[in-house]
Length: 390
Ligand SMILES: Cc1cc2nc3c(=O)[nH]c(=O)nc-3n(C[C@H](O)[C@H](O)[C@H](O)COP(=O)(O)OP(=O)(O)OC[C@H]3O[C@@H](n4cnc5c(N)ncnc54)[C@H](O)[C@@H]3O)c2cc1C
Image 1: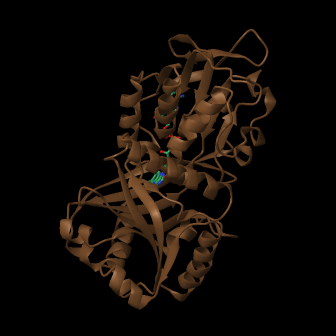
Image 2 (image 1 turned 180 degrees about the vertical axis):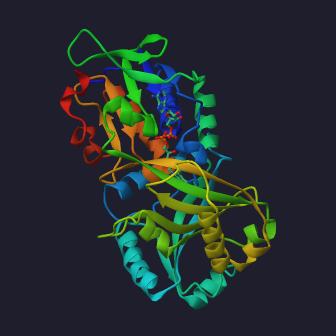
Image 3 (image 1 turned 90 degrees about the horizontal axis):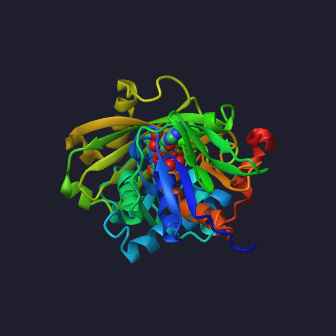
């Protein structure tokens, strides 16, 4: 396909996906206007954990995309852009029951079959490699080559490097159809029309109203906790912990359905010496608040697996809202009915990992180049009818 680079582009949404897209478009010389209904990283990106990880994936399109996502983080860290905001570490998936051990054995084999470097740790192996874990841990799988990043730090890095200032408090109402067939002329805001040669919708849950996807995108709340600094315990943890139950709560295992309120434990030792502990998956109730029941259960599970956490104080808790898609795959690509409008949304619990590689991919297709990753499984046309542009 011949390259057909636009001169200007509007991006709707300044979460990690919009910010990454802005970065990669400006590097190609495209003038970017980035509009947000509220502020940069005000959505899921600013209320996420931040595992840059393939550990919970099964072989398939999400695994392929996540492998590309992790590789890009490494490249940007080596190149300097993410040098001090990407923490390289292993993920340890830990089984505490016979049922979890069974799931974990199968999952480790699946990861290995996709080329991911893993090592099974018996109880004796766990004592040696991860002494901070309690005797509840019966089996662990170390997944090598993973990492962690804080979403709002990545957004800040991208926007600063791109030299893009977000137009805050600018909710977009609709794509502005052009006079020519299949052409978007820009976007419609509360105060008027903003023209551009290309439009990219990266609005997280806000994408539903813009593209008529109310029955396709599902807001999925997650509650997280942050502790005070505990340098000694933090330094004794060679990576993050993901409970076997997290695999089940994320619904990434074959034949799994997600409970109305999934609880799966993740404990991430941060660069600051603090711990980020999560979390829930909830498709009902108040979308933004924490509740004492969830906080209590998360803490109880965390201390059961890492007893040293009992002496560490909880500093704060918060909740964010992921954008899930009913078939479990994001929407990335051209918006049906338009030649020059694109969407990237629906990343559920994987958008920190996938944000940068998605931004790079969108920039490629906006310029008429090869996408770089296989977009067929993520085709927006599986949900967006052609008439959306009319
Ligand atoms: C509790 C929790 C834990 C998570 N943990 C991880 C993890 O460990 N690893 C991982 O990879 N991912 C994780 N995620 C998922 C990740 O945070 C998201 O997938 C990712 O941040 C989505 O980014 P986004 O840019 O698509 O959307 P968002 O960050 O939601 O950004 C969308 C932006 O669009 C703006 N907007 C909406 N509507 C409009 C409109 N009409 N006009 C203008 N602007 C609009 C919003 O204000 C917002 O700023 C987690 C998420 C949560 C909530």
